[in-house]
Length: 115
Image 1 (cartoon, rainbow, N blue to C red):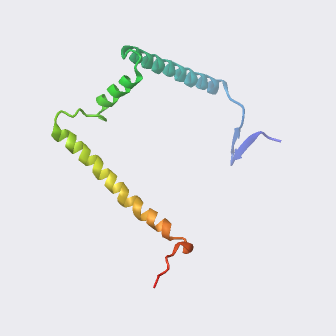
Image 2: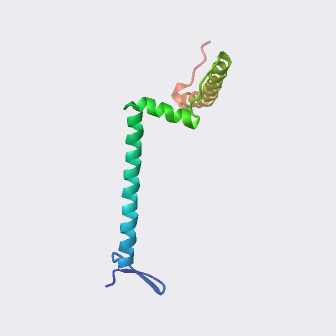
Image 3: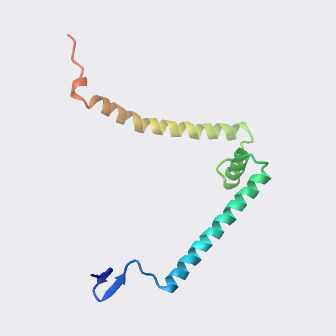
């Protein structure tokens, strides 16, 4: 009985690793651990520079990446609010017909005429 997988003439042995494969796995795991430690130390350092305020750290990140833009005057504010209003309208125009159809799908909900 073989513990390998036969693919034509190629036989791949399952569960057995060569010395080279073990070294490659150790290198990959070691580099992953080093990268994780580097990322953790960078995060802790930035959090320390923000005086431990996670909210301020996230706000600074969003400002730096352009997710939040400062509103300097009334026109900027109005334009921002108008864009949000348009998104709410589009969401309503998509959700309301689906809601209406789901309400009127049940045959027991049909209205009867009163004469």
